[in-house]
Image (cartoon, rainbow, N blue to C red; front, side, top):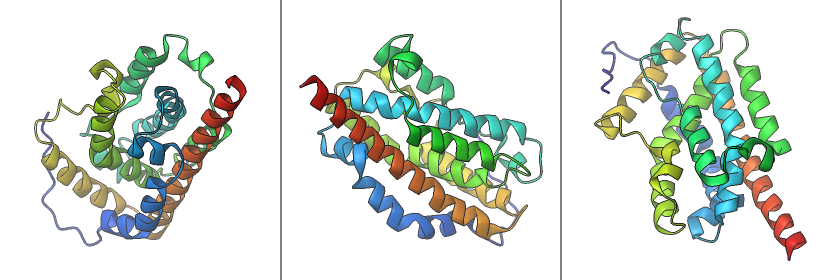
Length: 226
């Protein structure tokens, strides 16, 4: 699938502003919770599955919101990009945990808070969803590809357990990232940029909270079973 980038001038680069606003939080996220353990190679399959289970409602709320606003000014710019991850994550969870994953793997309060926040941002004109689309999808297309290789090589996850990070339907990942950034910039032109930028910081904070909560849950479970 190839998506062409719009050609009109962009007066404000929301993705650059989001990058600078969230840079410190991004570095903190890499050093926190289950994400830090994944990057160090010290996490477990169960820990990754717990993280993925709690990200599923996050993506579901994001994609429901984007679908709801797909014809609205601004967010209509994102409509051509079929980046939805909900079905892929569900497929991964079935492969990792079985068909009853929603009951057997807990939905943590931090995961519930993250999903609730995205649901709230979908209210009104929905433009705050731009911040969450930036955080999740560009994260999957960039650092997520490093995580994918780690999960395959260090944790021996199979391709059927890594669909979340599979964007093979797009022939040129670099072009996809460039065009999606351009679309986010044009989407943000429909509203004030400052609230979107601050929502980006909120998104990273929620992600860090979830990562720490997953790590704590895994540690508590290990202590009980040990």
